[in-house]
Image (cartoon, rainbow, N blue to C red):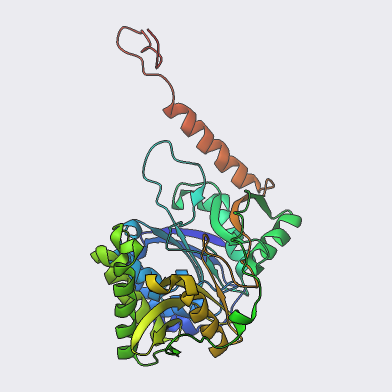
Length: 387
């Protein structure tokens, strides 16, 4: 039986999302692909969140709390499409979500042949959410020739993938066994690392005494986010017009994203206070052993004292088992940054006869659409650029 079936415009799931989030792993079931707009994925938030928890490579930037808020508030995310990989019958109780891959839509001329994974300045890590027990099968399904018309693309380019992560290891294994074609683009250089020093390990001290505050309640977290926004607006970014507070969409997204992720303890907000005055603030998102600094600000008057660095050191001490990764352009901590790069994937050159026949039909169809039009006079129209 074919393990890939493509659905375009599948009906909404509604209450089915709850069943899909707890369905058992059934490797013998076929993988069914669906393409739907990111804005329409709120209906499957339960299955989506459950997949994020069992993903081969966890990614806080692709969780419902982040992407649904982005789709609601940010224009750049409203046209994003998502490739979903399901297992089990559409209306059955055993349906299970195995893959969540955001991609750019392909609705214009002169587009690259491959589907391009979601890339945005707010997204520091681009690993799609793949069920750790079925990651290889999902990748093969996404690249199978019989699913090419799902979004009219051949191949898939994933952006900002960790070169030493579990997803990269799975891709290398598939490539070595001939089940997948993989080509990597040059990786982005890591940010410079800060040397380990006593200042990064000792408790922060300063004139008047510095105090680390990490709100726990939802109300206190909302207040801390507002303080960070105000600090950013009063600093150099605010004077240049680049502060988040100057864009109502960015403010709405940041408020919704932090509140949503904080409900599941996937967002931390820290403040460094001098008496009652905040001198640094940080918003960190992530789960498990790693998290990412999403926004960090410090009082301009305290910039020479590295208040933000002291704040991050205090947040690491509060949760020693969790590593805080910094975005590109900022000095990294003593552990450095993971090496990220783009990975281009394609189906294996070996294919079944029916796949080869399908490719031949597609090639003939494309060649026919390129034939020059003949007028009634039988004269061909001039070539582009001809006199």
